Image (cartoon, rainbow, N blue to C red; front, top):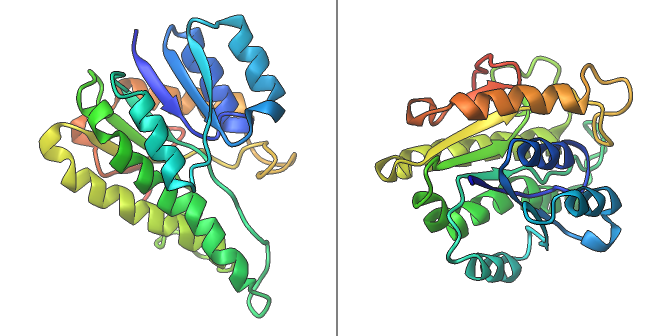
Amino acid sequence: MPTVLLTGANRGIGLEFARSFAADGWRVIACCRNPDKARDLKALAATAPEQISVRRLDVTDGLKVASLARELADVAIDVLLNNAGVYGPRTGFGETDYDAWLPVFAVNTLAPMRMAERFVEHVARSERRLIVNISSRMGSITENTTGGAYIYRSSKAALNMVGKSLAIDLAERGIAVVAFHPGWVQTDMGGPNAQITVAESVAGMRRLIDRLTIDDSGRFYAYDGREIPW
């Protein structure tokens, strides 16, 4: 049974990933900051207790991440899926909330790097050996034609650079690292007027995950398979 470790699994894209992987027979280690409030995730786990385990994890807490890595020391993780993310204040030029900038980076950029460092051995001994970072087209420097969103854009652009360097550094271990743009999705972050449903987004990304190889490492893909320029 292949294994996926998933962050931000309590709602939206993360919850749908948990549902999708479990339906396909994967073992799902579903992590979120506050499982006590994750009613939908706990309900899902109750339907497949032998497959889905819910773990409390604050991805910004290095000690907690290290502790979970030790607890799972004997587990081979086929896919490490860094999904947890925040948008931060929706302010424009002249209204920047500088105090909020670093917390967004802590979740969107530092946490995926921390997860990669702590779980690299788990991934290295698996069959699939894949790290997926959920990024955003808004982190593409080439495709930024509208400006604004300084905090969110910069955090995802930085995540993309982290992923690119990881792809280079981990290549000799056969670990592929890719970034995904999930689309403009109908979630709490994307809002009800977004273009696609959570199910459509995750179905597309699952198809990508199923076909990715080491040759795809260091690339940035949209949920529909199109490659996005950095």
